[in-house]
Image (cartoon, rainbow, N blue to C red; front, side, top):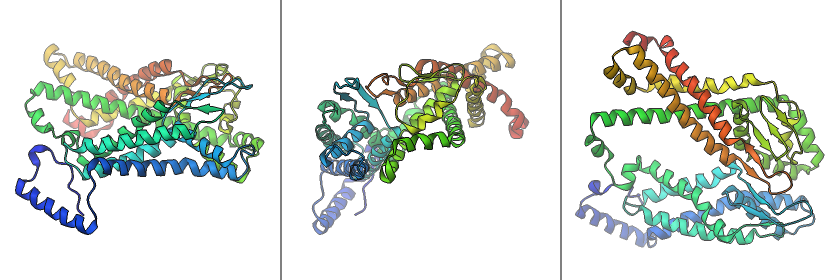
Length: 445
């Protein structure tokens, strides 16, 4: 059966066309089965997303138990551990019980790569719901999906209760909705083509009613926001390359640390996967390190290119990368500047600098307008990148809730401040130097 799609109110088919379409769908429904209401379809899509997401964590947990990783636990305990992994992937904190190892803290350390699984499944569900509803009906499908996922989260929180850790039922019900709702909205927007079409608002008509100066300001700020995003993405990519190079040059230390744990073939595969799901976290840590802000691995360990204090480490083989001295590497702080150069270059190619034009009309000399607009451009692009870096640093931080490992992750505020300065300076350099390498732009000037 062909899907209806998302249409705003002023683009709906006529009443006659819709009546014929409904009759055709009714006859098709008699052959294929009665159609579901949107809230029920949303619940079914949510069930599929929950089921596939649960299998992603449940299968490795049962495989590890079957291989003898937890010899003192039953298969029900393995299911509970898988439920805890599901909760962690959705950002739900787990409260550790008091024990001889110094428990009693909060376990909150989100595996960001695993979080992409429920997000991608919700994104798919959002697209399917958008194809099956009008713009003013989409909320019904999203509401049905959200209610089912909340109930499933509360049930998972109950399944994941063990003697060592447990979560609050209302946290298990509410917090996973953040990831799911974001995926549903992004997926629906992708299907609709724009947010205006998604909610039934004619964005083009609204823009026509605004003044030319407002459109210029909006175009400039939108270009600045995208340049800031590009600056952060470029710095994230540079950090990923740095982490890869260090991993390749110190792979012996990682393998040795893994062999000391003696996980076995199946346990080794689960251990490797368990480290892989934290790869985005580690890249964010590397970004914090190359920015100069640094990161902590517990309350007694801190690493930056200028100063290092090594202390106890968790039993995580990839952290063997920190076994060698990381100080006297101040030169890596130049790398985020390179990301800023990319952002400034992109901004020059994106379109006109309306701020520079406005300042030139008001103050006259082009050199003054160029200087002021470039300084403001660097500050704004750096600010956007810093906000994104702060959000990513917060998501990649956490706590194991045991012993000294209650402070893991980047030094958020220092990292954001330094990245704002570094990417901002790089943006100004890239914006000023790009015309020298752009023949077309030089000829136009």
